[in-house]
Image: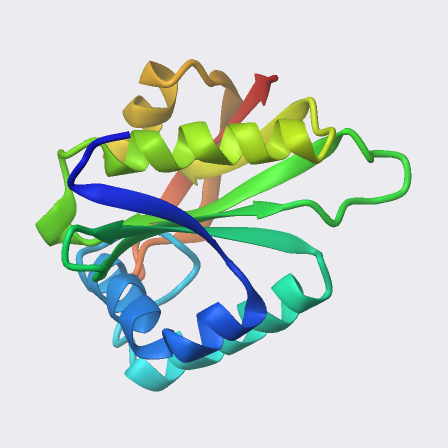
Length: 175
């Protein structure tokens, strides 16, 4: 881990007590064009509602939220491991919402979050991880550099925050 940031697993209460900071990271990413399920215009209220729902999901042990803090203890990144899967898929988890604030990018935070997420998945007896991302995005090439295998693309799968349709690339990784 880089000495300029630290990684943390957030509980429900951690999320609720850091709603503004987490919402700030999400807002920065969506307003910057990240395809993470939200549309423009993106309001602070929408961000806070998302994190409140996420906190409830953490409380129900459906997901794990990892957070990166900088040296000043400001939240600069986050990623989620969705462990609540169908009964016939206890070995699998989904990866969602890898977010790094623009002021903290290119410093290894995304890679560190993903490596820690993989370790958490192994601790939870998960051996297959799955994720999707906008085709042609920087995230797509990032996941490939991190050893993820691209399965394929689904055309017109989602809208970018500005409303333009985009294909989505599906990835998996064996642990």
